[in-house]
Amino acid sequence: MTVAINGRFLLDSFGGVRRFATELTHHLAQSRDDVVLLAPASADTSSVAGIPIEKVGRLAGPAWEQLELPRWLRRHGSPLLLNLANIAPVSYRRQITVLHDIAPAIRPQDFTFPFRVQWQLAVRYGMLRRGQRLVTVSHASQREIAERFGADPASIEVVYEGADSLPLVPRQTPSDERGTRVVAFGRHGAAKNTRAVIDALVLLPDSSDVVVEFVGNLDPELAPHAASRGVAPERIRWTGPVSDDELAAAFARADAFVWPSLHEGFGLPPLEAQRLGAPVLASDIPINREILGDSARYFPPTQPQELASLLSEISGSADLKTTLSAASHANAERFTWDATTAAWNAILDREGR
Image (cartoon, rainbow, N blue to C red; front, side, top):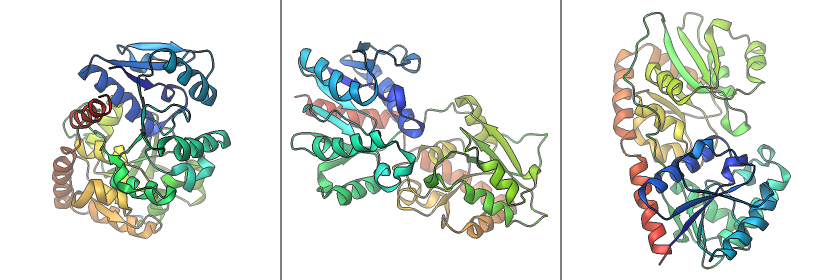
């Protein structure tokens, strides 16, 4: 059997989806000898070095995925195709697709019109077609997909993601820093709800020692928003993009990680933060309750005053930090790429018969 992985994610996927696709591709290639990654000619394959790769066609984007990719597959015996990033060829039948969430339907402003059209067609006429297999990353997403498209939830398989990609470093207490160190992602997109962190800072008393470090690709509107709300400059550090080593170090020195999202299909960052021992303060949405359980503290995502209260509480209680840090470690142990890969190998072997 050949397992062909759709490599379009190397072109235009981002954030957690790209990280998932890259990690699972690596782990599958390491665990079995029948994996080949099919990539557009223009794709940068440096992130998947060491994996068998076949460059296919001359096009890119939807045209590559809908025309050149299925044509190549049919010419090479119609192998099992694995689509890891929400999109699949509509006309190809022997495939398994990961649909992470229904984000293009509930926040279309975050996606281009061509992507939204292709996504709708791929889900309705491809992924949910009889004889194909659809997998998602959480039971929350399973319910949303089933409700949105009128599908039987039992027909959508759930496999959790792993959260042990970052290097494991010991908890740190920098000697040159004082105060309560809080880490948050500064990503663009309404669903990321990043402004709630800034709005919570505004509500803290002047005596508060909370300092927020924003990491990742920063929304350019965040700094102006903080300035317009009158947040003292010393309350925020705009770190920006970081390497895996730098992100692990940020989590390891954090007194708290704030995850304020309004919607997620899974959400790797809070679990990765937990693995490094960071206490997690998360928005009270179904997916966070599902994967974090009792290991985190929750706040209504549209009520920054509740987040401000949690920040004040964790700032003033060393015992709470210790308790949540221990709970973080225990919860994160449940999510490993070895477990994810084993579940996927079982699916591939079953479908490849």
